[in-house]
Length: 102
Image (cartoon, rainbow, N blue to C red; front, side, top):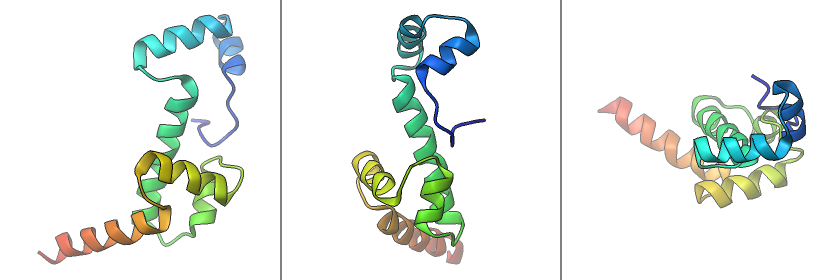
């Protein structure tokens, strides 16, 4: 529910009354990802949906996803998705329009 806010492992650990090291280890064992990577993946998934389903600016989406600026968002998006957010939007909107026309 708070994916777009700054989330620290320490805060999660305090919330569930566990030690930060233990919660990190437990989380990685259960999901295969660190807490930070899991949150990043979730933010990027929501951002990808917004990029193709809305006309909102990339910067607006980036800030709403909890990234501190457009450059940070673009860098993480390209590193994890393999293309810049604007290219992702263009490619996927074209694909969606083609599917709707069929």
